[in-house]
Each structure stands twice: as structure tokens, then as C-alpha cells.
Image 1: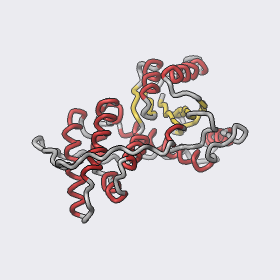
Image 2: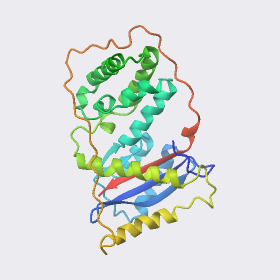
Image 3: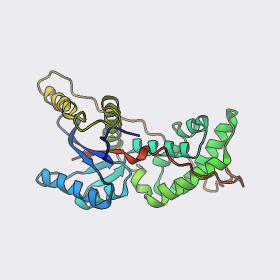
Length: 283
């Protein structure tokens, strides 16, 4: 969880635009907000549009999984495809596993490529069936490696998954089936890398005087200017390796949890009160 916002603020929303000429994403807005309410997101997106003289007409927007933010973006930019960032999805699921006290070794099995992330690449109408397959695959891998399978804890996690990622968010928000791999590549890798850079360079809950993003912004602009001057090579766009869809038997049964009592979700450590959201916008 990111903690680089000054105390008293709920989040820092960073807007990055894709520069087609150089292939780079450039941060253009840093917005500190004391609210995470629907109205606050609407105002933020509205003022960004106004600040650019309504010149932004994005084709794709990748952002955090915040319903109010996604709704505001879709209203302001009705022709854009708004999808959730796979990096943020992975973080959210990992935190949920911790809240259900699932042991690290079992978490590692689930987060291995080709297990849980299969749900992000299969057809939308296969996700419910795919969830049953993932449950069985986790149990199979635990058995194959001699790892105890925590039935009750997994029942709790899958209850959370159903409520949050099948009901609260539509599958189309986080499933990239049918999308161009280039779209996924030029956003998710960039957002993850920039979030990591900010976390490493900005201290925990800095004061307003020490919350300085001018240097980071200047570095991005400098790299952008260096490219046409041949002082730096054009960045090669990363292509993330999406997991391959699997063949899911149509008659697969969900017998992975049995009658084990469901584990209760533990309270979080409170770190979610300060959130940093990053938007990747492709024009």
C-alpha cells in the first residue's frame, strides 16, 4: 500500500498520458485529495478536462479499482474504454489473502502465473466456471507439493472474491479477454513501475514542504525532450506476458472447500486510508 501522501490527505491521483511520438507515458497531473467520495472524483476528472481545454479524447484509460473514479471517467470520456489495472488487481487480491490469514506458501501457489490470473484472460462467460477450475488447481498444486490446504480460509477468500470481483465490479472491468496485448503492455507495466518509483523516492507521510514531485516531473519531461535530440534512445515498449487461457471442462464441479467452516475476514492494518491512484491514458 502506498503511503507517500501527506497526512490529512486520502490519496494522490496521478494522471499519465501516453505520448505516441516517443512511446512514453508522462505524468501530467498530481492531485492531492482529502476525499474519496463520488463528488470528489467527478470534480477531479472535470477540472482535469477543463485544464486541458477539453482537448483530451482518450481511447483507453487504465486506472485503479475505485467505482466512483471509474464512473466519473466514463461519464467525462464516454467514448473511452475504462479498465482496471492488473497490477492493482494483483495487489488487492494479495491483501485480501492476508486478511484471511492464508499462509504465504498457499498465496504463492495461487499467485503463480497460470493459476488465478487465468481468470483475467478467459472469455467473460467462462469466468464463473474458471473460478471453479482455479479452486481445484490450487488444491491440486498444494497436494502435489505437500502443502496443507486451508479450506476455511479459502472459503472466506472466495466469498470475498465473488462479492467484490463478480458482483461489485463487472468482469469486463478487470478481464482483458479480447483486448490488444499492446494496450495492456503500455499501461500496466508503466503504472507499476511509476508507482514503485514514487514509493522508493517519497518518504512515508511527508510534510507538504517535502512532498515534492517537481524533480520527478522534470526528469520525465527531460527524458521526453532527450529522445528527438538523440541524447537518449526511444524506450522500447515492454510487452507483458499474459498467461494463456486454459481448457476448462464444462462439467467441472466445485468440491474444493467441502464443509469446512468459513474463515472470518480480519481487520486491515488501516493502511488503506491513504491511497495513491495512477491513471494511464492512451489517446
